[in-house]
Amino acid sequence: MNNRLRKITIVGGGTAGWMTALILETELSRTSAPKDRPKICLIESPNIATVGVGEATVPRMPKTLRQAGISERTFFRETNASFKLGVKFCNWNTDAKGNRIDYVNPFAHGQLLEGLEPAEYFLRFGNGDRDYTQSISPHDDLGRLCKGARPLGQPEFEQRFGYAYHLDAVKFA
Image 1: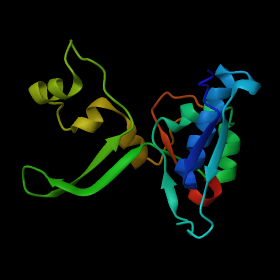
Image 2: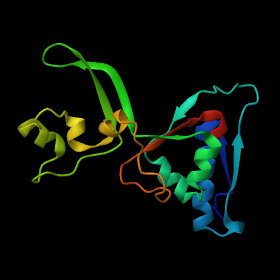
Image 3: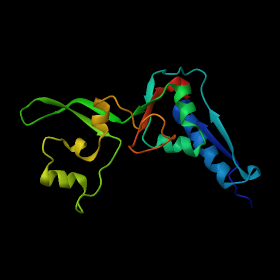
Image 4: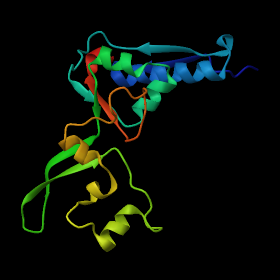
């Protein structure tokens, strides 16, 4: 009895549906012969309008594009993409004096410091006038200075600093 998977159906289109199809097709093409690959079918409703807003990706997206063989330069050009270094939450909290402060969640994680996780090290010893995010990552500073994730001219997908993309969702789909 042959229990080989013959068809995969993805219900729902948009970015999530099409990315799922891309990832499946990419991985299946690497792991199986064409005759053994299941057929991928994507069902998308013609009656549901596209939202048509800008969209942010997750920091894993550069690796996904690379694995799928998509040029980052082409991706930027075709989707009007820009680098995204993190997410800024305005008026997220208050400081010790009661002033509203913002928080930037960087697409980065800190390194162990003297055997301690960065958050534990920061709580124990602080870091002068710098907040936690500035202690573990340059992302907040890069954003404030209108700098990108890497200098122009560096190779595609060079990840000195973690990043994601912000893009035109309709063009991306």
